[in-house]
Length: 382
Image 1 (cartoon, rainbow, N blue to C red):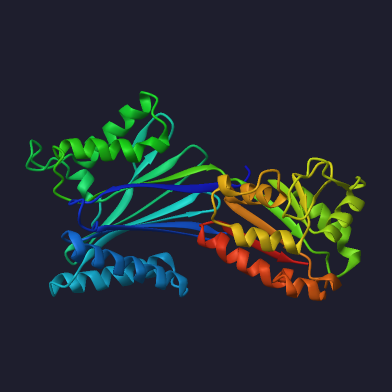
Image 2 (tube, rainbow, N blue to C red):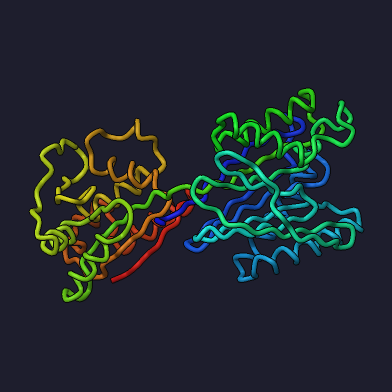
């Protein structure tokens, strides 16, 4: 099946463009699942935004503290129902979690129902519904395969046009019909959030009476990059680890001259300098037939850290640092195999004088940056 990635595309319009949006979204990922939260603060402007932001933050905190999805959901529903009774800031929300194998669960608190979309059609997802004080809670499940997705909405979409020609608003059935028509006419799934927002705005006659948000969770083939850096502690493990590295799905990158020698030996390939190398500031890179990129180690990783986040147009052409940046920038998942053998060269005073951090210090800093950019990072130390 290969690695599946769940891309989230969100389109949003504030009720009043000059004021904060009362709808707030958050996406969190790890190696096991992707979680997307869409929260609609009651009211509009700053008050609604604060209520939604607090609810999202609370849900995130509970999930990170070890609460199950349902426990976190129930906890915040209880809090919101209590706030509702006391006329305190309140928000409604939908949480969707998709596991790495595509199994999805959607928990919905007083929000529009979710829609399942594929290349040619849209449909309601069957859900179990129960009332909770004054709120309505729904649970829905499905399985996503490549090319399929889930659409989530705030009620500014489903209530579009209310009082402006549509007594009860657009409604989820009509939204579903609109989406199916767009798909039958050849619309790409990724264009649906923008199309829905545009149509909802039209039904509001371009004067929205609520914040509008649409989120698409879209399943596609994931872009995987594997990096092997640093020799293993035990040389007897070299062959096993190299073969494991080569068997992984995705691009293969080696960072480090000593690591490259090990890989070349196990592969029974030549290790050569790249004849196209022209950089004036980056260390040289190498070539091993069958690998996507082979670079020097610590200096290259330090330079990558220093330029991460910069646009490729600003970086030096024909540089291994630029090539490494480009490949990792488009990756959804980064698998790191880190050899823990000590490199005596890292203790050279020239490294300290140049401000070059050792592998064991620079890699955690890079991992932090990758994760801040929403990438899933898997680490194996050998």
